[in-house]
Amino acid sequence: MQKNNISSNINPINKNIVALGATSLFTDFATEMILPLLPIFLDKFLHATKGQIGIIEGIAEFGVALLIAFSGFVSDRLGSRKKITIIGYGLSNLIKPFAFFASSSLMIGIVRLGDRIGKGIRTAPKDALISAFTIKKSSGYVFGFHQMMDSVGAVAGSFTAFLFLRFLGDTEMSFRIIFAVSLVPGIIALIILIFFVNDIVFEPSPPKSFRPSKLPREFYMLVVFQALFSLVAMNYSFMILKASNDGISIFMIPLAYAFYSVTQTIFVIPIGKMADKYGKATLLSVVYAAFGAGALMMASGLSLGSWIGFGIYGFFAGGFIALAKAIISDVISAQFKATAYGIYYVSIGLSTLISLVLAGIIWDKFGSDVLFIGIGCAAFILAFILFSFRGMFVKKQIM
Image 1: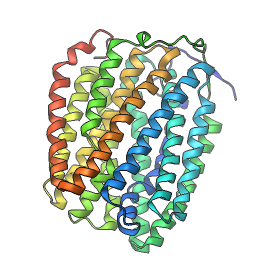
Image 2: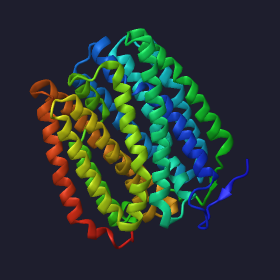
Image 3: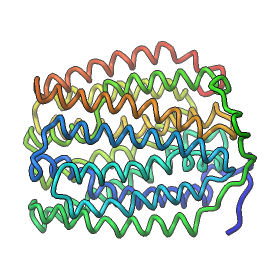
């Protein structure tokens, strides 16, 4: 397979961006067949507490963050991106079906951690690979496109899980069958990555050449805001449990999750285009506020509030990840992109670990309403602060 050199004259969406998007689509297809079901599986069939679920998710997210940093560091020094990306996607897609055999929350935790380790290995070099095929003026659009492909896969996976539960029933064996079938889209993702994505050859960063001072102030400002926000946010698992408590039946949970993914798919590219035009920091403050609104809707205790919350959360997710990646793509030089993505993800991962553990404890001790009202209010406060500081991002023209 012929390798390409980095070029500044690349169309906004080329065949490598499409192939990487398709790889993510089928990987998310496999992942989202399982992901919306795991909290229910842990709660209903393995009898885990909310605190245990929070610990499982928190450790998984922090593990992925540490490996993102390591793989990014290695990728920058190898002068190559694709090999590490293949290893990461391979681990994630091959370990998920082993949830079929899980008989305890510990076993689910191992599968979940293995999946996230795979994500940790691939994420920084994959993002750097996307960045290498992207021109700066279109970075918001390109990362938005990639996030959209993730979302399309998530919709397909969630809807497939819904169909299985609808026709097989919400029994424990139905859950396990879905876990096993997730192997199929995972294998398709690997085939696309191996045969249809070119590698990128670049000058490796010299050993011991990296110093924190080499990364610009705007990057560290982004890390601070995103880490603070991750401290007050919680992930999909608690939203799913809240929706289940508020009257959404088990077999409808994947459909609610699919609704979140559809909303993300609809908004992610418009958010990227608006960010390229009006400012990425400005749009990021808007998605912070959206998360706060979604959390308060879910705190209503009504099933309708949960449906609306999932929709708003989709809008939030469409911007939170893609905008941060686009900002990093804009302000970091080619030699240190993967390292920067690694530092970013470690910071977010540590914050997420703390957030999920605390969220589980708060739910067990004070109930879900206190948790969701608290994080909703905190999200609005951080949105206001980021909007107030948005002018400090102008220097590198990431506004």
